[in-house]
Length: 147
Length: 147
DNA sequence: ATAAACCTATGTGCAACACACAGGTCAATA
DNA sequence: TATTGACCTGTGTGTTGCACATAGGTTTAT
Image 1 (cartoon, chains in turn yellow, cyan, blue, green):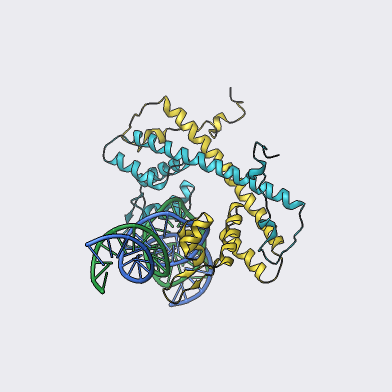
Image 2 (cartoon, chains in turn yellow, blue, cyan, orange):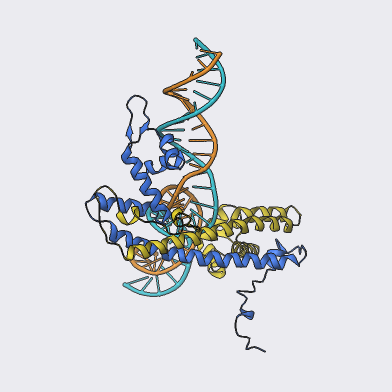
């Protein structure tokens, strides 16, 4: 089976399959007559595993390590548990950051809705330069003991 | 002012300043005696703008375009509004994806808490290969009309 | 003068692919 | 049989926003 067929079968792009092959996650056989990569059932199973692991947030390097453990005859599960814990922390952090960014963007759009496009010569874009984040504006943060 | 000093002053790394310089966002003057980049007050203002824009989710390329508009004498605000709308959509999508990923990871950890590290020879990692996502498992999705 | 500490510019690496390119393969047609 | 066209292939490079490594220059202390 050539790259395109495997890709289609597994619902990914041919470039993705080539990428996994390049970094050694898949090990097709180089056809002698035309130089094409020939993928076997094993590669197909392997690719399925990679896709599942990616869905759970593992990086390709994580997956390499997990496969490495497995191929050395060790049970990869402890490593898997350890890795997902780290990835979960990162995902949690990304989630929080993305949430905050989204809020900032909404706040900016709200503010810009009622502000004109005025252009001082001194700045680049008055909208951006005069944006005050109501969430992170320390004067408006939680307590207002200054009145 | 050299790169380190400007970076420290603005709360970013010297590498960040160098990066912005390399892609033309900052335009320091090359000192003739030692070949170092000399940053002016203008660069400092520009850097401040870049940092603000980054906080609002604009890409460096967005910022280049906005600055380009401004330097051509046009008001960049319409462009700014258009760009942030696009970026907000992307951020919203990322937010949703990250949320779903987080949920999948939690579900996996929950499931793995009560499942042993069993290792079938045929698979790479039984934890990953036998993970069933309760959220996306179509058999458990909303309606159960098959009974 | 010389050593140590600190700074600089430039080149490369990272993640996970997507894209561009040049050329090979295969079936249909003239 | 030759040729056209559609489709496929591998390999090289681009993407984003920096961080890191390297080699060397500057400055200060001795």
